[in-house]
Length: 117
Image 1 (cartoon, rainbow, N blue to C red):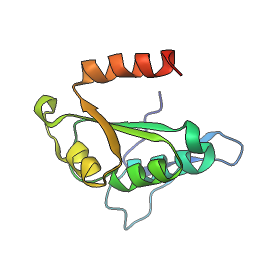
Image 2 (image 1 turned 135 degrees about the vertical axis):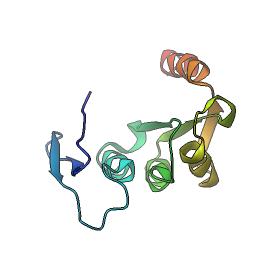
Image 3 (image 1 turned 90 degrees about the horizontal axis):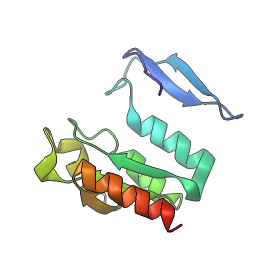
Image 4 (image 1 turned 60 degrees about the horizontal axis):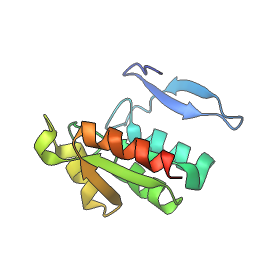
């Protein structure tokens, strides 16, 4: 697990390490999940998977597009089980989400996905 302070940006180095950098002054979200997802998609391609859970705003939507374009999979928590559904709702608006469910059902789907892979 990596905790990213609000004034930092998580970045993947060329050799696969995680680095914390200063967040841009004009950043809308800090830390920004879009940047993380875009970096992971660029470095890992088809093997990438993303799950968007309950949260505010549209952070993650651009990352979903990056993951899908790289050949990865994108899932999202369903609206009914969210405390705040705007992040998963925005993810679904990108038309990249292939599975939506409650966290419990997502966990079961994840186990089956890797068991059957």
